[in-house]
Image (cartoon, rainbow, N blue to C red):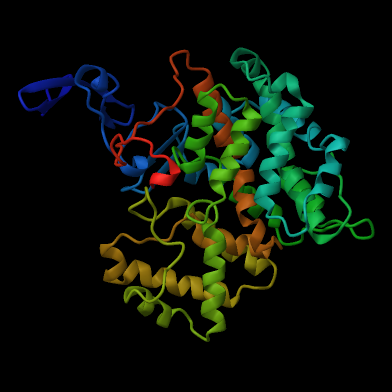
Length: 432
């Protein structure tokens, strides 16, 4: 039950008032922070699916309506009119930059592209078969060793250097990813150039050789910029919540985003776009256009990847945008009739028209089309999650900053319902 200011929890004859909190988009929650102290009770929410872990002003999602906004700006407008770096500034600082602010931000990111030369030797310690996410997490964490003034684990000092650290991480994350690719391919590192923009420089560091400069003739840099922009933040997902939790212990920004990379690694989070491409390739190799696979999915014989979302119960707005971008990119490189895109379109059509999928609200999500764009750009499948991490870096850093700037923030410490053995006495080994 509720009154105008409180929800009332009744347990037996006792009542416990829980103050109501209302967000700017009229989301309402009841505050149970004092419940345990007053009643001895805790709440139980396996997987935190219905638990508000923080108050945040960064990203708003309405999964039922298919709405995603960064700092109040609809993702559709940003995708059409903005860029990854401009949207990164918005996510990090709360407002769209002026021309001067954006230029200074771009310059700071540009100037931080190269990594410390001593870090190049770290790559020698990784086997060539290392997972790129393992390398990325380790290298991001080690950055703090080279810039200790930005990784003091003293909250006030780390906040004072946040602008510099944020630009550094945003720039160097793509450099580390590109160097990891070169290491795995047995190729020499390609150094960044100052005359290229963020995504052009990334493709240059990935694919240019001393004897052949990479040329982007299909607008792949623009498509990657859109991919990164659409992944910049997504509210309290697994990896972002991990960053906030690690940061709540006053860990520095480098350690916190490194933990975010590890959380993103799993196939249920950042690895989903890789699973989509593998699914499309399996369908194509079997000679199917997607029709048989749809029936198998409905009968429980196959798992349809890239559909449905923990939050969205409508069409993921990012999927609509990336679907159109995938068509443009494939047309530009001469693959407008790409069989994987055709299969993807067939699966999408079925999902939007078949009652089975409509009833279950299984709409295409952002992972459904992102893999097609990354494949077109020449990114190996095993690097797909690394690309996700590059795009998500602004959101991770913004959430770290938001938590670190809150004077009332406490270390995150969830409770549990213990279901183990009751107290028992130790037995000597000869009596067991």
